[in-house]
Image (tube, rainbow, N blue to C red; front, side, top):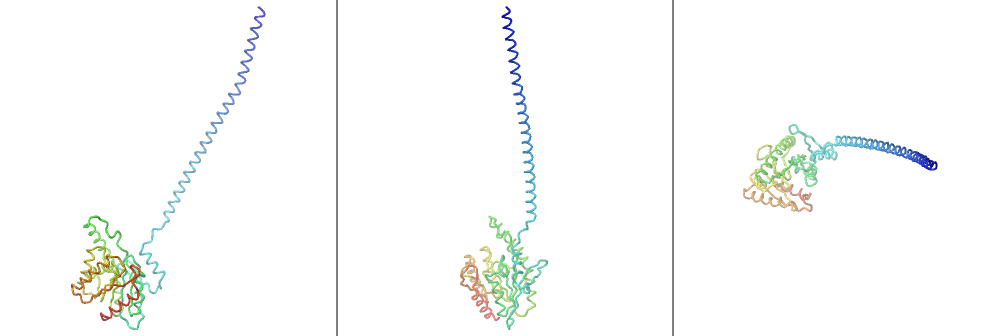
Length: 326
């Protein structure tokens, strides 16, 4: 009996000791787990803080970049217009004594006045280039500006306004396109007329005859102004590749030249836009049909499309003026 009690007591003591040992081992493990969890929470907080700082930095950088772009855009100058480019080039490249600013109403425009250097003063030649061309354009006008003074002509080269914006019309319906084109050309002619009036008033200060040499579309618009008596007519007109942008417009141009009392020298090029040459034939036929007294058409052989052979051009002009009596 005593032996049995001793055995039971021994096992009870052993159980208590083993339980205490296990609890002692588990306590550090729990503390370690709690510590690890706390460290993970702290790391997550630090990472979240870093992410927030980076996001704030990106937003700030984006705001600064956007502001910088806005500042750059505000400093960008608008593009210089074609007429301003021509004006600046002329003022930089020519003797200031030749450049003559003038007024057309309240609008400024530029002319180049080249006095004659011949013993005989024949008169004054007003040179009107094609729209979108400079008064120093090398296709024809600049050469005539410098050459004609050797023949006794004072020259005034006009820097014209640029062609109407969006011309010709892109309307698909022909009647609407024709209406828009007429409106745009009317406004253009209204701007061109006071320029020509100012130049003619300047030309009146010089002795001799008035000669006008006009190119391309501007030659056709000039005939409109003469027909309407919107500007004073010269003593003679020389056209260089005169044309309009439509078949009906070119037919009207032929009728205007044929019906005009102006002596006309109509010069075209062998190498040019096909339809410009095509409608030149209509002008010649109309002049013959109307028995226009002083009309001559000449086709010049050129090697570069749109560029006039200089010596041949000068020879044709001189020969025709001699025939007319000047």
